[in-house]
Length: 224
Image (cartoon, rainbow, N blue to C red; front, top):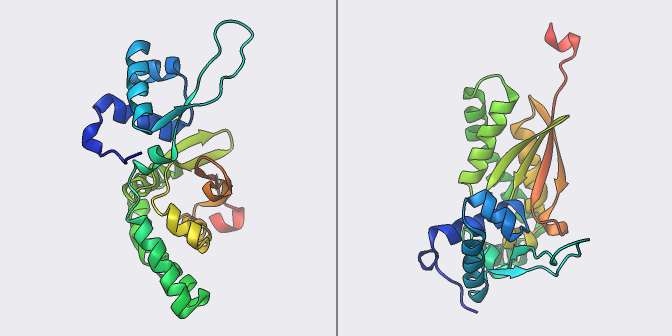
């Protein structure tokens, strides 16, 4: 199958792909409701996307009544439809660097790259005001601008930072220190405000990466 270009897809088809990327497998009925398209229209778009190799129907799930329900999801080619920040080239460079200079030098360079981004993130979050929720919205916007398709969801005991796309997936697959560096980077960005723990990991088989963010409790001694 050939990789299709963005220009070969309609705006509705782009919306369907993005929805499947952001929310995972979806039924025709749910897609129609979310995107304000008729179910017939959604089926037509899915058929065309299926023919292009971008989506596929999951195995039927049984229901107590009615017709079996299909869920649609992105194929590997469908995931490749989203920006990858020249990921394959980066993976090749990582392999060459490791072979030439060793794992230690590679990790040091990754850590240096993350450290260079830290001041800009902290500056943006500081300018957003004292409310942690607003800071996290800004953080998600910055991660989205970097290609991670990020969003924030409110939880009963904190927030969830979801990264629906990994623009460095191939590079991270080649050197998993990237993943540890990303976690440490988010912890450093929010060090003054919150604790960060990874809950979903793409390289561990999850559909996405996600991070539980819990506000730091200010003790009486700290408040004085």
